[in-house]
Amino acid sequence: MRLQYPTNVRVIQLPCSGRVDILHLLRSFEDGVDGVYVAGCMEGDCHFLTGNLKARRKVEYVQKVLESLGIEPERIAMYNMSSAEGPRFAEVAREFTERIKELGPSPIATAQAA
Amino acid sequence: MIVGDSKPLEEILSMIEGRDKVLVLGCRGCVTVCNVGGEKEVGILASALRIARKKAGLPPTVEEMTLERQCDPEYVEELADVAENYDAIVSIACGVGPQFVSERFRDVAVFPGINTTFIGGALEHGVWAERCQSCGNCLVHNFGGLCPIARCSKSLMNGPCGGSASGNCEISPEVPCVWDQIVQKMSAMGRLEELEQVWPNKNWLTARDGGPRKRVREDLKQ
Image 1 (tube, each protein chain N blue to C red):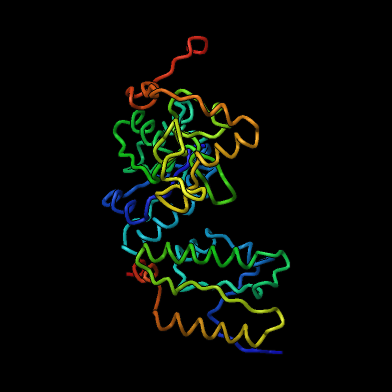
Image 2: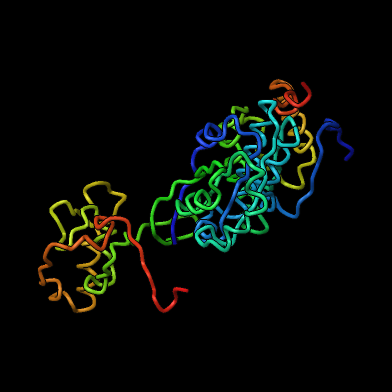
């Protein structure tokens, strides 16, 4: 299955979405990324039971931080998909890229470039 | 432990407005245990402040440091070589931290990054409840080990009052009536008759009503 998805998506592999940390998410915004999404397994299917649920809560926490800072919380999202769903992975990559394109470049990167 | 809550980011940002070099200062004591002011939270707050500054096109100088404790001068002294480098120090220790830091470094502006809320314990991960009001004269053994001062909305020594209904306090169905719990516990222990003792007015001089408190241990004092 050689599926195409937007080349701007940089994949960072983790052993479980539960390993993602609030600091990982915040630091990527600090470094000027336009958006971040966490792709975890389907809810209820976590090998470690609650990793993907914890990931969702961390994403929600960062959404609140971004909102407090006047940055669109839609720039970060949590998606759930099974590892057998290659086409869904590509579809989410396209969907999120579109959402970020609509929002435009990160205000952090824009301010830094100015 | 002393439990606190993070101040809203907007409030912290307005405190440090116009100050270029900022240090976020954590504490490895109580606030680390209640996940509000330890090394991890220092990293999160500093990162959020840097994002805000970058977004506003300001210098993002927000540095991070965590002391063993901010309530002991020997640990506060670790700031001696660096404190002067900052235009603002945001302490995310309990209310003691910003005061100890301000008292030691008189020329540096110090801001509290958290609201100190109560002395309590963790009911479960992420949930804390008040257990002590530091009244200065512990009497919990008379009430089945449950404190009516800290846990009764009216700090009643002779309860329950008429506002106790179905085990909850009249102020909110979320607040259990500690006097209901005391009666249940003393009954279960077969000690209910001990509650017949009528307590006279409590002497609040040992609490905050007696003014700021200070304790001197002659055997320890140098």
